[in-house]
Length: 120
Picture 1 (cartoon, rainbow, N blue to C red):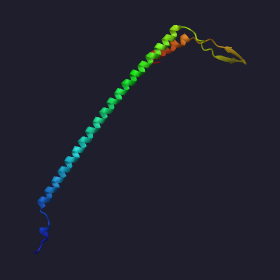
Picture 2 (picture 1 turned 90 degrees about the horizontal axis):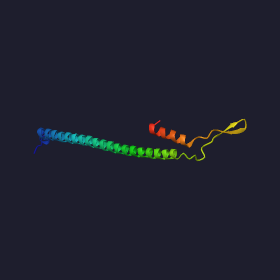
Picture 3 (picture 1 turned 60 degrees about the vertical axis):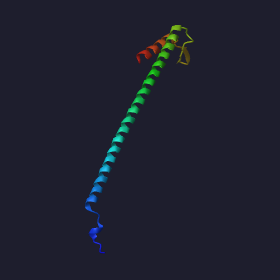
Picture 4 (picture 1 turned 135 degrees about the vertical axis):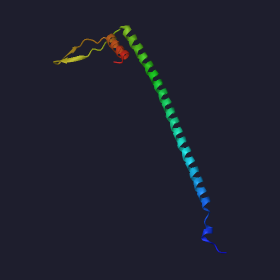
């Protein structure tokens, strides 16, 4: 039996078909992978945006409540008008201490309340 070199080669049509089929399957898999990656990225971005928005709303509500509580306290302090030994800073003048005018607690509370209300 004599073997020709042409009998050892597989038929060209079979090789071409296998290459074309493998390439098509590879392209389909790459396309599916790309689509799934983009979908996952979009889902993650949407979920992250929702979480950030929810957290921002929660912190805004918390800050608003805190500001309201501070305003209530300041207004209560201003309404009481009881000086609690107001601040009296001392200033040095030629070796002697002179007492400055006492700071009214009422006026300090009103200024703080005004600043909180106006965001000043």
